[in-house]
Image (cartoon, rainbow, N blue to C red):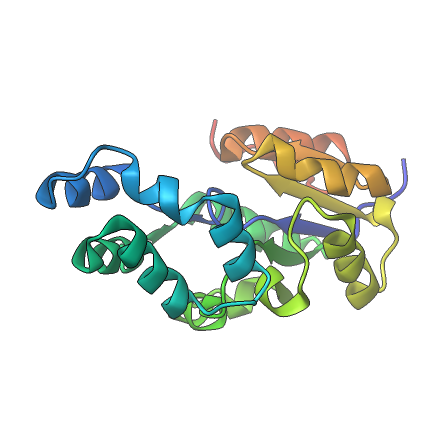
Length: 204
């Protein structure tokens, strides 16, 4: 089996998490129908523009407010707190200690650099590849090829994990090994299976 030289992580849903109850609370406070904010925010035309850098995150939130008819609710949604997954950070340390390179590929916005800095993730990752900067989003194969070119690695040398099954397709089409992230334990097993992780399970 060819060696895995790098592990590429999705950001949201893997390294960083938002509490869905926050969205529900905002909608209740503003007397909005459940799911109405994200139905607008994640509508394909809005999401594609912000995640490819055509519009800023600020413009995105403003447009959500206009479409929703409630700017305050949109602002509250756009400033939700988040938390870093400490178990994933521990796994990152293990990978790096074993000589495996780590990076992020996220369908993000222009504020990702500041958000990454606020979480102090810089020391954990060699690079953060942001769709708003590179111009292509997962699952576009060009997004993954951009990462491979930048890291000077072949597809079989880079393992990719994402909490969305659909986002794996672009990586798989290039020949990258992938894993659908549902938790750290499963990711550990998958990394061990491809020889990228050699430590005993710490979550036993």
